Length: 403
Image (tube, rainbow, N blue to C red; front, side):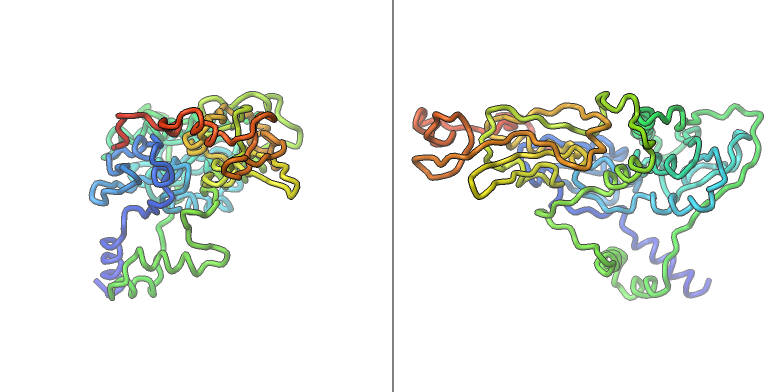
């Protein structure tokens, strides 16, 4: 064994299963939130949410399903998609492509009509809907996902979430008039199969990185340093308005996948998918809490010098985290399913507009009935001097812990 081989083994031992920024968690921003997208998706019960999200590194199987289901981008961006999409130039002539996981025992054997097989570095659970749509947008006619070995896989419990991801991708694809382009292979017929070209990529590690790890610098520290060295890439902060990579990639795929003419069903709601459309009622006081707390900038409150205001919403930027619904004190926001047209719209929609007035007691500016002289808070205190108001998302006695 040479020195570099030994260092590669040391690097593998040093590798963390996944990195996360707990400050970006919905629970860290909204203590009354019941979000548990990552815990429900984790097949190894390695995630716990109590005030924020925490990872049990020993239990984590690094399926990376949590990366694309998290609405606020808590987890690191290494979802195996970059390695897969790097094969696109080599697959430009392939019409039917199969995807298999790293644990599949014989991915090179399968239906004869498949022209290429790509084995990704990890589990198929790491791939979000955006990856499949990106592949379709690149010109591949049909994607076949290999699920025929999940039953024997140590992390086969991830299969239901893989199926859910495929269903999401299929619904979006069908809405774009791209029907029956994502299929799945769930069992081995035992005959009629043949060997096909197999593409696989092994992550390359630089010698400099290996030596840094060997002297104790560690992979996580190196990864963070390299990330900060990339142009235009800034470290995440709790107050930063940023869109998760999954949504960025999805929007890019939709822009390339949709034909020039709008799809016939562009106005049909995308029911049951992780997207949201917000509506606001007349109870809105233009307090701006929803816009300030929104982690992606989907909600914006614009106030003019003449005290005019406009609350806007952009569906493409909303990941449905629900923070605004919980923290809206008057309960003026309502969530619905957006249409494909709303999802791909590049301009925000105006939810509410008007003119602000100043409260005669506390001096704060607010929106409401033209006859109101007090803001909602002062008006409540006047009518209920010993009462109190709780946030809409607060449920007395409800457990706020999710495993």
